Image (cartoon, rainbow, N blue to C red; front, side, top):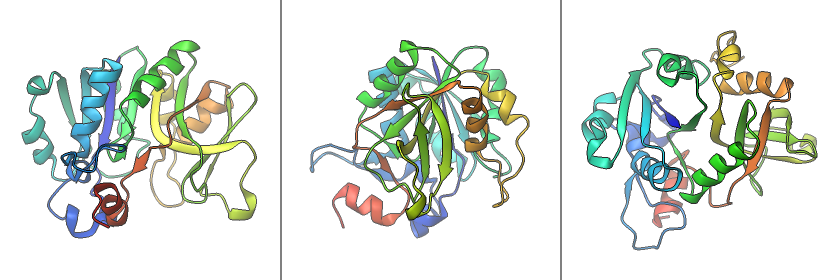
Length: 247
């Protein structure tokens, strides 16, 4: 299986930390690591986890802001036991169109997809792969229990763990039953491209991957897989400070 990592955005909420550095290259302590564990780039932690736990060594990184820093750090991946391809997202028009850049590279097989600022214990990568292999469908989405569903995607499941609805930033008084937080980690089949190819811009002016996932879900082809609760979206300096023990 190949992995596609979305690492093109600037990460403006990180403030000065990303003025000259891509957000996925910000140094962070892996979730659940010992307090004295060394800090390393977010992307490096993701790549080593995919390699060591999921056996994924062929990776495409979608780059944009300060792309040369990522390229210079990882090179062709050989020093890290990986084979890395880079594709540039010239226009930052959303996560929905980024996978389209890698359509030819992906080919006809299922692929892993993650945002470049999401950290999980490495074993969660294996959990997601196993969940997909258990019953291959159009895709699986990693789910987190116990998160604030008003701050992200609420994934609503039926009794068989099929995704039946995706609600973005639900109002506190309108959180659906049987809903869980979207981790931003997926395994998808090339069938997703049927939906990314026809995306329209959202009200905020971007092409949203979530809308393509809704297309899969409408056909009953998207399932949920539960991950551990040590999931971290390194969304802002406050989260980073908590993760690194400097808050």
